[in-house]
Image (cartoon, rainbow, N blue to C red):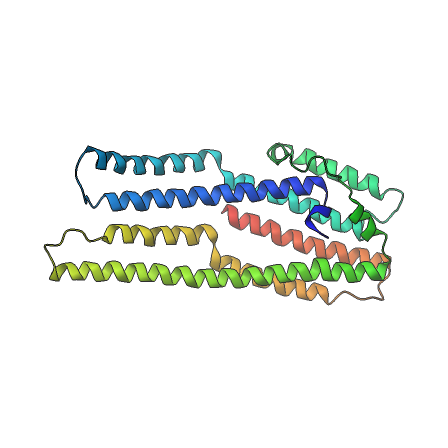
Length: 287
């Protein structure tokens, strides 16, 4: 399904999650930038009130960003909105695949409506923070009903290609990206340490030169270490790799000879696996 084919509640929660994630990352980047600029000004290239006022401004800017991040906690809103969005997505796939409890044609729509309402009520504090851009969209879209009206074999093929294979490709791609990012930032951090160490030794030969940017380089190295801890590249590489393999094992159960009950169990087991991995991801991000 296309992004716009999901229920309005998913679209709103998904957008809110992305917005809070962007806000959180920009706060971190702003705080690191303020620290780096303050460390450059600490070298006292110039004198005068204006210079030191600017120096103080960068320090206070870092403090304001730190307090904003600590008080508003946008990362928590990011995680909660993402959890809400993924819960709705799981319900959507169960509905369109006729999985329990959506097997009965007469009660499927009302059952989905009730479960969406239940999720909304359970996450009301989170729902109050989601975007309103998609509130006018349908909760049960035409695309959802079109997929639901497919024959079982067609639904199995569709589910395998557009849910299982899509999730497996996503986790595989993310594992590769996190592995690459981990290597890159380790190399950059190591280079910063080497440069700072080389400058410290060079000061022995040039004791009269005052402007050695050793402290700013140390700040850069420290910021990189903090960034790697926040992004958890190494941990996510391992977790996403395991998830990709687990999804590959789930795919082996896709058998065209399954009856309706077996297919329902297959879909629900797959969705539980996706939900479990996402729950663990949120827990890791909240550590």
